[in-house]
Length: 115
Image 1 (cartoon, rainbow, N blue to C red):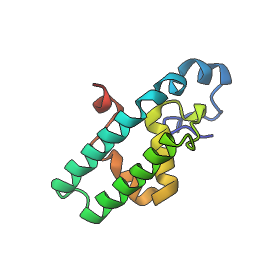
Image 2 (tube, helix red, strand yellow):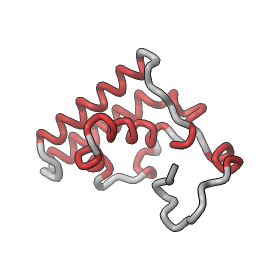
Image 3 (tube, rainbow, N blue to C red):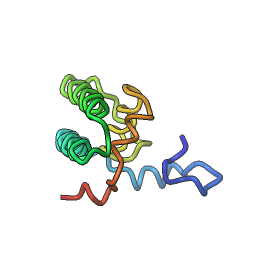
């Protein structure tokens, strides 16, 4: 799997490095908070007219589907996606498509998610 941050690397990440750097094995517990933060963020983006109301609604709908999958233990957490945010972001892309799902990341970095 090609990493989002791995554009300059020619080879896959060594499995030992992946095992060492992943956090999904314990931060999966933060899913509810990651989704709530994403809903707040996309709501702000729509309020500022950076995304349309329809895009906001589609993203929130996708995030609610994910929340439901997690609640029902039907969500597949993937270690290779490293953390809770990437797992949720990847699933959102599968549900609503990259063009709209990618807008959730507008004006937001991982550092913005640290509480």
